[in-house]
Length: 210
Image 1: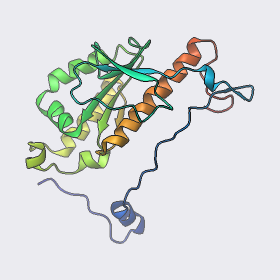
Image 2 (image 1 turned 120 degrees about the vertical axis):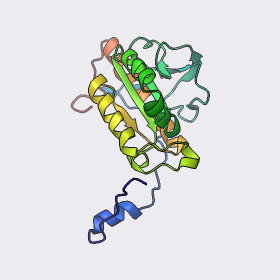
Image 3 (image 1 turned 60 degrees about the horizontal axis):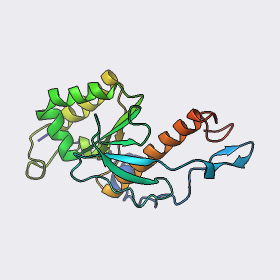
Image 4 (image 1 turned 135 degrees about the vertical axis):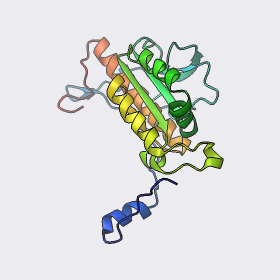
C-alpha cells in the first residue's frame, strides 16, 4: 500500500485541515455583472449555449444554472466534451471522472496524449477532473477503481501534461453537482469575456477590476 500522509498532531492548523467537514455554499443565483462607465450592461450580454459532445454517456446537467447558461445541445465535437456555440474552434473542455482518469493515464496513455495534442489547437482549453487533488493523492480502493495504480503516477502525469501541452487541470469534487457548477462557471465566464472582446466592449467585466 502507498505511504500515507498523516496530519501532524503538533500542528493545530494541519489537524484542522484533515478533520474539517466541508459544507460548500450554494451556487450564485445572479448574472455575471458587467458594467461600463458605472452602469450595468449585463442585459446586453447573452447567455452561452453549451455544446455537449454526442459521445458523452453521462453529460453534465446545466439546467440548474439558468443565471449563467442559456441552454445546451448535443453536437459531435472534434475534441473534448464541452464547448460553446460560436466558439467551437476556440474553446474546449475535457471532463474526466476519477475512475476514467486513472484508466486513461495508466492504461490508455498514448491515446490520451493524442487527444491532448488536439486540444492545443484551441485558444482556451482545460481538463476538468471530477475529484480534488486530495482525492487523487489518496490510495485507490482496488475493488472500487479496479486498479493498483499509485496516486503519484496519476498526479505526476497531470502535472506533466499541463507543463507539456499547456492544458490547465481544474480539480473539482467527487460530488457531481460541484463539478457541474465549476464547469458552468468556467464556460460562462470564458464566453462572456469572448463576447465582450468580439463586440467592441473590451476584455474586462468592470473597469478597474476583472
